[in-house]
Amino acid sequence: MDNLNEVTADALELLMLNQNALGAAIEELSLWVRDKGGIETYRNVLGALETLDTSNEGIASTIQLLRKQYQETTE
Image (cartoon, rainbow, N blue to C red; front, top):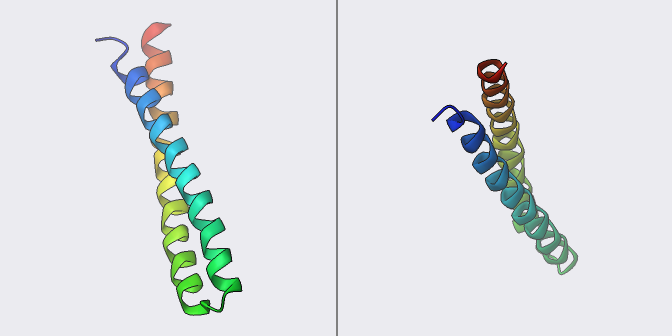
């Protein structure tokens, strides 16, 4: 179980990458909606994407912490 932090960090990183991919796809769709006249929907999507960005920052910080803790236990 010494590598639990590393395994957890790897899993979080995969989830974050998936979140980034979904965010990019949603952004592309929102641009299409905006171009079709859906300005209000576009703005709502941008707000949701900002939440994803904030969440990503927290996940990235947690990954760094877990990796640091893992490195400290393996030294």
